[in-house]
Length: 294
Length: 230
Image 1: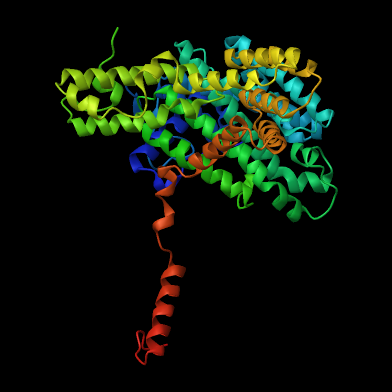
Image 2: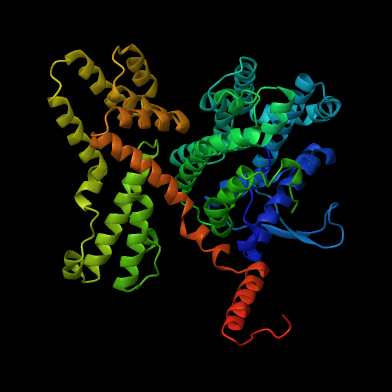
């Protein structure tokens, strides 16, 4: 995942922001405790969001502690502890990071990828033991993604399918008891995955056009090497439709989920954070490397 | 087990009629079957709607407000909701009326009927298989193909197929209706009140300076002055 899921900070109450950060720190500490300190470097916002979302369905009280941590040694911060959804998000972060690094090594011969995947292998094996079914399905979906990219698939919808399905798998957390909730979460995950994939493809378009590597948007709309700005302007509306429609489906699923807590931050993300991010990326005002930290 | 109707509507116990009514309307807007067309979660939304209607009915009757409730009954029809959404009923009737005019393509229209049935029951692979077998690629083929794509989550292709169906047969009410509904979902999400309330109303420094400068120029035109130094 790429860290596109963010709250719209200026609109957030301090209390809600603290809560969101509490989950973020919770996921980070959970990883550190179970998989070693190095694994903590890989965390991004999306997984913290997943922890908040999954935990919002059950009515149990938050177990929040106020602690110090290595990254913020001066000021103590809220940390959500002893929470199975936070642990689950931490596990999924390990899985995604491991595959991402492995992919970097095999595709681009990136040394960081080789080094990173070696570091994460141990942690990944632990997670794979715990969540065997999910990791197996993710692996086969990644194979499909790879195949479509190698074939230079010329349909954006088709190319986005494996990644969207990976997110569906991840969101359908087995710790959630109700079948209906899992179904809703699955659809939410699918649409969010789709949104992330398209947004990421848009973000990478310039780079891919220069280097000539595969990009589903360039492939679908048959970019001929002309002016990229013009090309972007021509297709923007159409992509905007797909992106916004996916988000509207996420929002509908969220409405059916019936969150009983953390609604402040979740409402903010679903009704404002995601669409703001879409506009920012579509206007080219946000590159991936400009991500803020909490 | 019956849920607490106050909780279902999200109001405090002992809330007034107006509060209940307002909460009810908000919820109807949120879970309206029109919003969940072509959506795999439509059955859950219907379930939710039924719960909301039951809770509302219960509160209106048991608080002694039966009379008021009847006179104010909302446009969302309760009887339809319990059968699975007003949309479904409307959909069925459109469907049947459409086929009456097309007796000559018996086998094709039979296939179309099957495709619709599969889409409704969520069996997309089967629907796609039949669509692939059909020989005539007319407006209704593109429409059905669009529906299958939408239901799958392939919005880009779904939208272009529906658009194509509309351009091939602009007079068809159903196709236009679906296209409009897609556009409505798009604008509905973009213009949600949470997002709209933000920044738009605030003024930034540039705007303030610009406005002052304008006001100053106007005053100067009339022979006065608003800001002395310029």
